[in-house]
Image 1 (cartoon, rainbow, N blue to C red):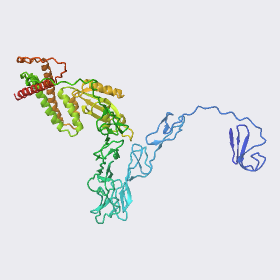
Image 2: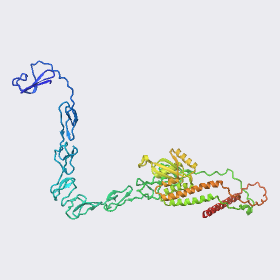
Image 3: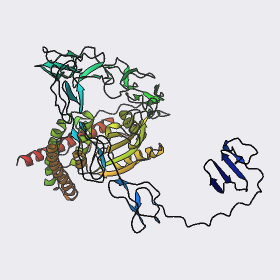
Image 4: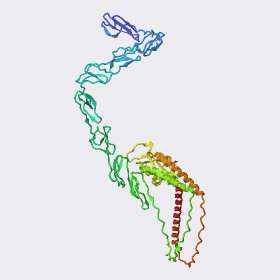
Length: 599
């Protein structure tokens, strides 16, 4: 409608199209609908010309309306409401000044910082505090007679009594003759908690006689830990009945039978022809393995016999990486045409069979060589004392390799690589196998690779960071180069670094630090003395020996013969002569060393 006319008993409105509709009383035909019936609904007026609707009023500028929690000040500006007040959106900034309404706090609320805040537990407040005023407070709730405080609320006593006035904003209170809760017992008219590892039903009367809690007994394959029943670790068992109120108990490990190994804390039968003849593997420990016999190798976790021209040491582990047998060199073929039978040589005199050796003259070694022998002996005694304090054989072997290198004054080489295997032992065995190097010539350290620190289920393997230590004392440069070449041929990427053996000794977990430092001093002296001895021995000129005795006249020549003669006796003589001379020389050297040390 564009306009509306309101009367006392009827009203009319003009529509946008110029038509008119009226409603209300019609006893005198006011609605002009050709009837005298009143109508609550608008009806069209008949007989009127249709007129054009009036033009729309001119547009006015849009008023500035304030947002929520703003009001109009004397400068016709929307400003923020004062603290503790509020206002609806829509105040017209072009109009008169407006005000905000006070925020009235509800029941159990109080004013803090012009904000309505819930009363603390156990207190109340009537509604009506104005947030625009000062701070207010709540009143403590005081329990009525035969009520007590439970979690800041007044709770009726259960068949017991209590004086009025317990403060609900404070600690819990009890009624006279309180009934104890679950896992509580009566002691000296009070409810006290059951001891660890015991339980009790609720309902003990605190005014009655003392009561006791019942012991908790653990089920099968459970043990007591801190007065609670805990499940046994993997690979262990326990009978039912451990008393949870007593001391901690333990579960028993299971020992595997002969030809069984441990996999994920379970005894598993050896596979692929491998054996474990000793048995007794502990299921509560790490995974173990079976092994192949001598002259067998591992192929896809099965033991396969070496070829007739090959051999292999025993104890290739299963499950583990594939291994290889060693080719046995063939003996040289016999000569195609053996020599003809020899005629016996003419008899020789004893002097011809065993000519007297030249006289032995004692030659003292250079002084630095004697000092080197003494320093080496002292360092070896210190090394043996250090090794005696190490119980683990693998760690002891590693420490000996490092100690021998320190005494020799040489660095050790660390070969680092990543290999996949089922166990740490398998990873070490795989490293030496791929290098084609005897495991006794090095030491192996293994840790789970940082990218895969989790156990995988069979038959998947785990990635291990493998570090092999080798010393120039036992592995020369050519052998080391060959081992690196073998790794490259196996598509294994290895990094090689040199390191101080004494520093590596200090890094061994659990090794005695004082023993290491004592050995380090002795090893440094031995290495220094050995270096000095090497220089001295290359520059020392021993005194000239006395002239030999004149030779005996040669025997008369024997008649020439066409028969071939092999001087077996002469070769044996020369061998005995050289062996005796070497033995005498060594004895004299050690005699000089002993005399020097005593002096």
